[in-house]
Structure formats: C-alpha cells, structure tokens
Image 1 (cartoon, rainbow, N blue to C red):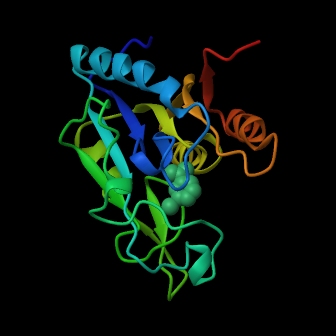
Image 2: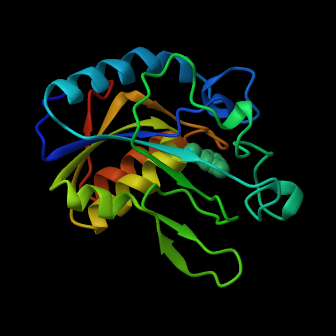
Length: 198
Ligand code: VGL
Ligand code: ZN
C-alpha cells in the first residue's frame, strides 16, 4: 500500500483483456493476481487526492507492432474490441491515455514511435500530469518487461520520481528472466521497486 498525495499520480498500465484475461491473445501469466492489488491502490490514491491515470494499448488492425505486419507480437488490443477493453474487475476511472491509435509502435505511456518517420511523439500523459502538479508516479499494471518498464524509464527521464509496486505488475517473459532484468533496469534508472519478494 502506498501513501498518496495530490502531487503523486497512480498510473495503471494496460490492464486490458488481451493481457489480463487468460483467454486474451497476449495473456500475461499471473495477471489476475494483480487485480486486487491494483484496485486497492486505486482506492488509496483517490482517498489521498492523487490523480489516477489509465493507459490503454489501442492498436489499429494493422500496425508494424504486429507479427503479421512485420513486428513481433500477436494481434492484440485492437481498438474497440473485447481484447482492448479494460478487464471487467478493474476499478476504471475517466482519465485514460490511449497509445498506438494511429499505428504508432512502442511501449511507454508517455511516448510512441511514428511508424513512417520513426520519430518519437508524446502522448497526452506528461502534459496531463504536469498540469495537475504531479511530481512523482506510482506504477502498476502490465507488462513489467514492456509497457511498465518503458513508462517508468520515461517518467525518470522526464524528471518524475517513480515507484513500481512489485505485487502490482507481471511480466510477459518472452525469454525467461525478462521480468527480473526489467526490474534491474528500472532500479538502475532510479526507479524505486516496492514490495519486492526476497
Ligand atoms: C505491451 C507488448 C505489446 C504492454 C504492449 O502493454 O506491455 N506488451 N504491446
Ligand atoms: Zn501492443
């Protein structure tokens, strides 16, 4: 559990059916276990007056992110489909940042890569947090080795203090150990990992 204040935001990363439901196309092992943790954090954040921002992976049917179009992933989180919807047990709010909507690639809640120019373009997240006076972020969601890590590293680069709750994240682990490597990479960038199992 985390102490929240209005200058700390809770970022809930991609708790969507394709990642969080066992029937999802890119289902993350153990994802169901984070739901009660995430919901408790949401309650704590709201009680402390902290903004809660949700991200959604929001792909078109074709994007260089998908294996069928030259990328590495099975088709997932296609806009307006069941797979892209928030998991039904998630306590959803109204502050949502969608990423990839125009075929952009990448993983961070803060930035995306334009598929044609290769340029990095920002999402609305940084502006939203800055306008709210946010100085630090607490991150939960999916997946540790992709969107959670990329979001946490961007948060640090943008000058936020960042904490990731170990019990509130799970890894895709395309290769065994990816999740642990991601935790190490985040620590190396000054991200605080809270509640890590020994
Ligand atoms: C993600 C793989 C592909 C994530 C998104 O949310 O971590 N992972 N697209
Ligand atoms: Zn994706």
